[in-house]
Length: 147
Length: 129
View 1 (cartoon, rainbow over the protein chains, first blue to last red):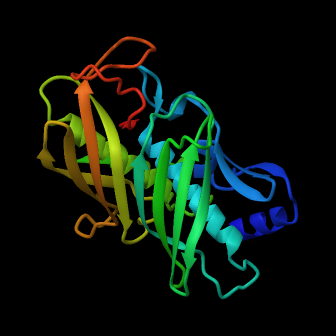
View 2: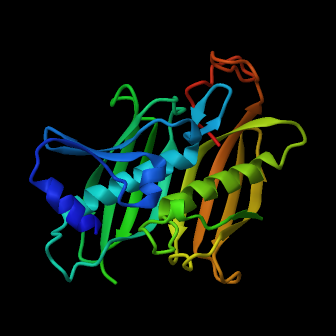
């Protein structure tokens, strides 16, 4: 399902597409964006994402979700989705470092595939808000590529 | 022990009954943060510094998720917490999480950055709960 969704997007150099094919992604306000060939996952700000009201800061769990979604999207984007033998990657673990507090604005995340082996893939993801050089969180993720 | 009831909004794919990994991660962050918060007599602002989640298996369909937490250590600056998430079967965990939280006195001022006991601004460190 998500493979078909991404395959359609692959032919387009620029897009800003809602991820509402998944109820969870819809609830979180996740979007996929592509500018200059790079895939970016966006979490649109919504008052429900706030974990602490004074001063308003995003809930850490929402940022963890965003980073995981960004990494998964980047991984499926990278692998050959036309190969039917390729099962959907399974998350093995995520390790998140929270670097700055999340302001009540839109949050962006981008992931990089460090290594994609036959059995496992290792990715690194970063989330930022106003300035990409000042990430609010970073994550290391492992995915299992075979059943 | 904290429970997150099943809700169709948390499904990874419509009608699958499987709660998204992200929702479980967010729930573990909340549960472990609550466990850290629970270690103090007075109100403390709990800030996540680091969270690691290992996924063992996917949750049972249409099942709620519960988390059992354990506080490992409280130091002057940090609280170390771990927890296991369970789905239908309350004996085999579906995920395990380890987190480190920092804490500071709760401030109720709106806007501005809070100061910790050293007087240093801590507004840009970490993530609230």
